[in-house]
Length: 290
Ligand code: SAM
Image (cartoon, rainbow, N blue to C red; front, top):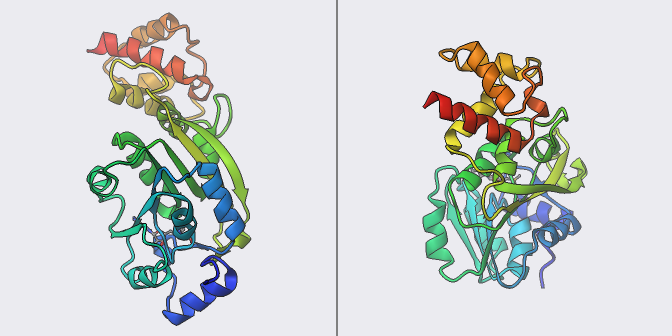
């Protein structure tokens, strides 16, 4: 029986055997700690009923741990040079499919229909390429893909923003976008030393559990996100100033009136508003501007 892929010696052997050189531009920082990998799989709640979707398998460190626990694993990898390596390292596992695609371009729903026709529960589990963390997470959340949860390693700073509560410095439009669709919890802080090569930033694992329905009711989802974004355009400005700047054709007196009707002091800053307050506010502005 082979040693786990993610031990430092086995990883080194694999990289040397295939003469692999890391591409920084693809966010290639591979995990070399099997304990961390098992904890990620634990935190994701992967069981024999789980269909697991991985983004960026690298040389298969996490894929292997998923293959041991999940019913099936489908992994999207952009770097063609990794395909023969994965065919080699994952040869012992017959429940893994590697899809050679940029996940941002992929039609994930069709892949799910083809690869997981009877899955009871689908979960995304990944050590994400850091240069595209947010676009990947937002794609998974906004495209209505039938997944229960997303458990991913990312920059700690991004995890902090995703899980931030109102009134904190990290709270902003990303917190609201993520928490609109999911319950967000940071489950692990990970030191740089468990990667080769070591990244420049600290890392964390976040678990996003999809809500059955969005956290708040909105008259128009797109408009809700427009109001949220406008409210954070200049963080140091009041909600009244940010909204007046954004909705230039609406009289300032009307903006003030809508804020007061929504029970929001116009002098507050966007970062103090809860998601519910943003929903009430955007629904009230929507009603007068449409
Ligand atoms: N899962 C492996 C591990 O934990 O050791 C590798 C993780 S590494 C941080 C990110 C992986 O994502 C790399 O294998 C990289 O080639 C791949 N990748 C980068 N951009 C991608 C994209 N747009 N779509 C799919 N895979 C991508």
